[in-house]
Image (cartoon, rainbow, N blue to C red; front, side):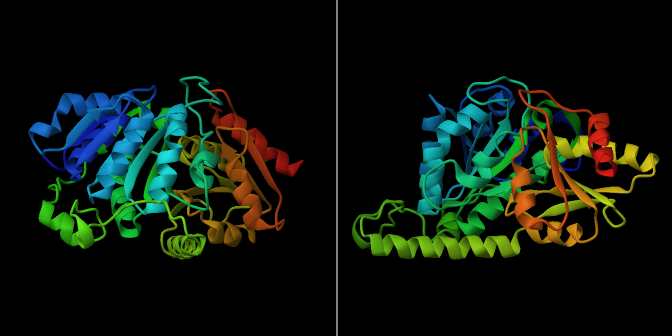
Length: 358
């Protein structure tokens, strides 16, 4: 049943959602804590039911280049990995951004830097929102905070990727990827026919010789032409910033203090806010759902009404830089986080909020 409520991990929900939303191909490589995505797809064998291709590539570099190739011909293709693996994909991601090729990259973050730990982290905020590859480019970044959103954001990611011909990163973490929750999987959407792909993606590579072919590349040797292409990209990014900002507010309407958190950190912060309210502290939260584009205008609006902002992240402080840029000194901004795979408690957040009263 399409509306059946199931119990599964976030990683498993991604795999099931990919099959149901008409994904044409998955190319990935195992790495903790996201290996269940590939394992679930292998167990479900969608190539026998929907025709979806599932390949365990020889490396993360190979996987992202397979996504590049699949996206070039207008197919809904995706990969998943964790922090060190996504670091290896950065060259392919910037090539996709430069060539305007849609695709979905899922990052179930773990602690770093380097190989780090297999425990959860949010240390790839910069890697995703700033772009770890070369050049002036952006990718759309969605941050799920539940197993349900892990499932829901797969189809949304593809919609955004093809609407703007741009890579999309779903930036999750080891908490959401490994935790089990109830989830309602999205309705089944059949894969597009080749004719539908050609109609919807006239820009895609056709394989034809001569004038009929489309060449998908990020290479341009003429600097004047390359500058015009960059101006085109910047205009597209401006449109995305204007149209695709997503966020969620929690008890922010009467807040004296504002917590900003995403992903699993937002779930912990929500409990901390409940504890603060019991103590008589009027605390609310803004949860960015799109980390890029960032909800700058909404933070500015809320900053005019609160006495302080606390950025809560499972890292040393990355999103806090975007908050500071947004508020421009209008209100004090602090950051609290844990590193190395350690996750804070709601009580720790309450303690940090209480420091604003000191």
